[in-house]
Length: 596
Image (cartoon, rainbow, N blue to C red; front, side, top):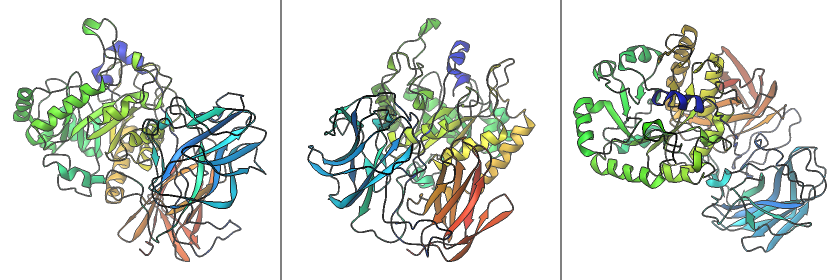
């Protein structure tokens, strides 16, 4: 994001970047609906996998035509059984496929040949007998392809993926994850490169599938902030959901407050607190050029800004190549230990406020060279995150002519790098930042925002600047159509804040899309006796009809589609809806919560 803090040359460089997503939709355990109408197959709620049928690789075909065994290291949090192995198939990944489950040392535990495969998409083979697995024990699931052309997303396992039941391990701690071996026949895969995800999955059944909700890992919502007496929400107010603007003049505070904004993130030099105090607006105070690490400086800032300061800030985008003195080009990124050192200084001098860190667009774009000599070192990000309590990154897909779904990939990445223990915000576009940039529509901004939230984002920061052809730092405010739409969006988010501040349920819904090119991502929450289902068409693959099946549902219920003036009948836990437009969002409230 941080164009307001950059030289014009660096602004131009940043406009070349792109953003990305891989939607991870988890399946769940526990409980049964009354039945599956309309010829739908029965759902076994006791089964869980890391990825659902809705999940799609970014690199569907890695291009390698060698016969290869590809796989993944994983653990389960509880004992149970592996009943099947799954993998995502590209159209060129033809020939025979053999699935194998291995111990961590290469002992073959089960094997099976795939049959009746579709030309592409998810494939599954069930073992003749279910294989018992122990809790917190490493196993390897793999398949062999004669033709190669396996899916391969690099850097995916820089951090692990955890759905609360299965843990696909972080590459570093697992001595490499995303494993492979080039071999003419099936063999134990022992090599790893770039933490790549080859999109191999398992079907796991826990030995004791307790009834009731199982929750996804998350960072505790507004309750997270209770640890800081002078933080964003020291009382853990469930109505608090951070909606911020980046690098805006305090004189605009009342105008942004009228749109629903409740936070300023970073301030121009020389900013005065008066207008922000009058608007009751909190500030994540950081000088984007440097850390305010000097205790004397911090004391001076607090004397000026007082309790408006809700968080300290690290230098902006330390992960990018840093400008050299005198504008003489760019040097390396800031080493992660330096960021952690400054974090320790902040915490020692003022433990009453959290520390905020904003990183750059490389989070979801492993092809960009924005990081200079640090390019490709994705292991830096978990280290950077250790120097923060709140993390964000930048998303401008329309401006850089990239798909909107990149915003979700970045959110998934940051949350996994933070081990789901710290809230992650995302900075999104609201204007055409440069003369050659694309301008997002209000519908696109709404889609970006809800996609971020559905993927676990716990804060939104709007980037409002226009740089060319004429500088307008508050360009979003001066666009009546966009500002009106954002005001409506913010009102909806803030109305739903108490719902958003509850943990997401991992095993509450299954979804099937009639169009494989348009998966539908979901997030399900419970609040005050109701079930809330947040959904979005996650790729621009054309219109689709989605079928939603709810666990432990009553025989007859109604899904009220929020802010759309319509409702949908639910029969035996199942209902359908249409997603006709790219990245269309629907939010449903269903008046039931399953028994505990």
